[in-house]
Structure formats: structure tokens, C-alpha cells
Length: 122
Image 1 (cartoon, rainbow, N blue to C red):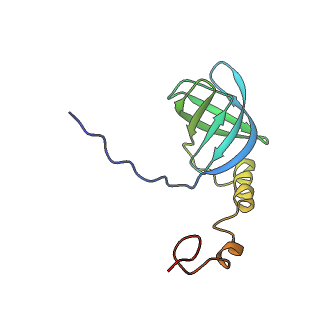
Image 2: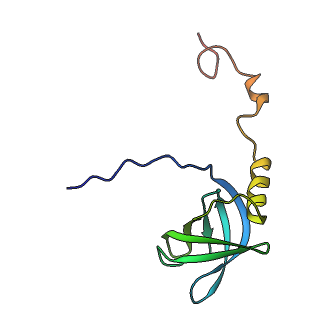
Image 3: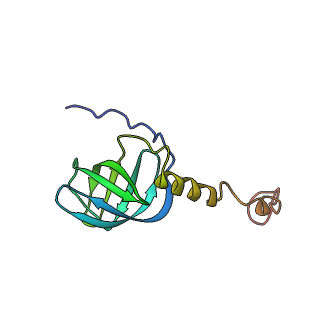
């Protein structure tokens, strides 16, 4: 019996986005929506191609090449062989990260009780 190697943590932080794209497979063009994006890959809802197939993602006049890593009936996960470093898709990723709050709101930290539990029991 062989054991699988331990999973490594993701190299890139995934960010929630909402971007309409066209996925170009070998034989067809499919409209989809990127809902999860990082420099190394994306989750595309509404489009599905076979695993290990290669495709092109068209967004904002840019073509990004990708390999399908997993696929379900109405969505798939793709990996970019070349990391996003520029172009419309990268700018959309940066804009989504800037709009996303990072960390807890400071207003709640100032209202914390110092005791134990919700009632502040000691």
C-alpha cells in the first residue's frame, strides 16, 4: 500500500471575485464566472471541461492559459501554468483584495470584556 505525500499549503491566497469569462476548450466556447481567484488558479462556475484538459480563459481582452485540475457538472478548478502577474485578470484580483477587509473590525475589540465568558465572570 502506498501513501500519498502530505499536502502542501497553497502558495497563493484565494480571493472571492465575480468575473464573467469565456472559456475556450478544444471544440467549444463556454461562458462562465470566476468566483475564486489567485495568482496560480481559479474556480469557474457555469463551465465544465474534462480533467487534465487545457483551455484558454478570455477576460478583458486578455487570454490566460489554464489546465483543468478538477471538474464537476457545473464548475471546475483550473491551474495557471504561468502565474498572473499583469493584465486585466490580475488587476481584477488586486482590486478584489483591496476591497476585502483584512482582519476583525477594531470597533469590536474595544468593547471586549476582560472577564471570562459573555457576562464577564471571574
